Length: 220
Image 1: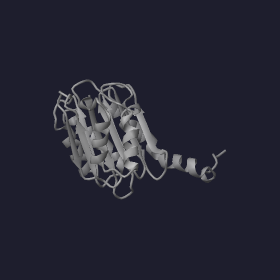
Image 2: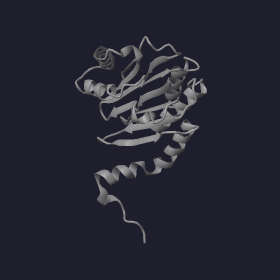
Image 3: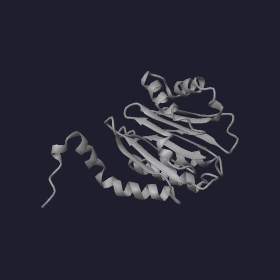
Image 4: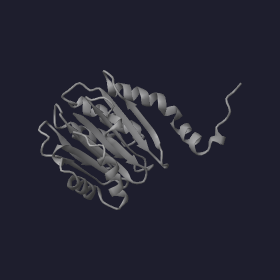
């Protein structure tokens, strides 16, 4: 009951992911990323333990395909899981368990991977990859949001969407952006609005963390 895309900006090295679903608080359970390492998406009947475990496998030198193989081998419930892994250098892999009976798919593209389940149309991940690719001149958050909107336009999820999330990592151990819409009648539009509000201050928040003395004082 989810569709998502993990992507990489080849120019900046930014990594990130965008996701939406018919359950609340999807960003708290399904999206994991680390700068310089990669992104792991865990969905369908979600096991949040697989996200950190996948990042640890990437840190040990596994490829995305090896990471997914190890995750699948590590759980007796792999048939219920849908996974996608993107490496910081752009390679990717995806997996959909045999117990997923709804319309679903996973698609890898250049510097991205998309996956979805309980879809109106199995072409949703392909539409997301195409939109991400076509928006190559934009920054990574914009490309991710464009991909999410394209997935919805291509049919989206069979059930009413309720939550969405955008996670971006870049240069530091903390997230560049970690935005979540936890319960909304239109979570994709709400996520777009939230990013538009956050974006003008995103770089400033990084400076506040690493060099707070460089922030000018407030005017009297």
